[in-house]
Image (cartoon, one colour):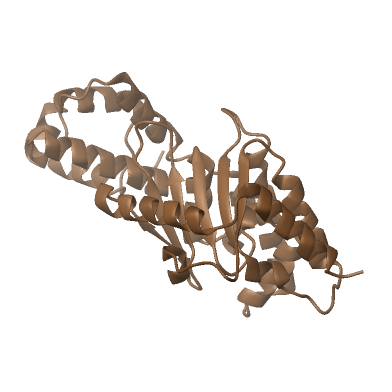
Length: 290
C-alpha cells in the first residue's frame, strides 16, 4: 500500500508543537531524540512540523525520554495522535469548507470552553439558520447560492456541541455588542426578532452565558475587534482565535494568551450583567418586526 502524505491538520500541528516544547525543555537535540527512538532525524523533524504521522503507541516512549511521565500529558498527546488523521463530519461538505475553516471547527470541537467578544454580529454558535444564510451571503460575495446554503448548514451543525457532545457540552461565554442586535433584513422583517428570541432561549442553557455590550459602554479592549479565548481540557494550552474578513488567525504562547484572557475580563466588566443583558435583548426584540 503506498504511503499517504500526512496533511498538516490542526491536531497534528498541536501535537508537533507540544512534542517540540517537551524536547527543548529536556535539552535534547533532534538527532539525539530521534536516535533514542531508532528513527532518522528527518522523521522526528517531520513529526514536529506536522508533515508526518506519529503512531499513538510511540507517544509514551517519546515523552519518557524527555522526562515527561505525567499521565494527563501522555493521555492528552496520545489522544491528539489518535485523532490527528480522522476526518470530521464537515468533510462531507467538500471544498466549500476550506482548510482554515476546518482548522477552526476542529479547534471548536476539541475545546472545553470558548469565551468570545463579538462586536459586529451574533456569534456563529448562537445564530439561527435564516440569520446565518443572510450573514454568510453578505460576507461571501463570491459564493454561489448553493455554497451559501451549504455553509449555513455547516454553521447550524456546529451548534450541536452546545447541547449534545461526548464528554459534555461546550461551555460558551459570549459578549455581544448591542449594535448587532439592531441589524435589519429588508427581505425578511421577522428574521431578527426570531434571532433575538433564539438568543434568549440559548441563554437558558446552563453552559451558555450571554452578555450584551451596551452602546454607551466605557472604552474596553474589545473595541479592537472580535477575539476568542479557546480553552481545552488539562493539560492542553489555551489558544486565541482572532477573526477578520479573511478568516481566523491563531495566537499561542503563555504571555500572548494572558493578554487576551485579561482583555476578556475587562470586556465582561464593561458589559451589562447577565440579567440586564436578557432584559436588553427582550426590550429590543419587542421593538423589532411585527
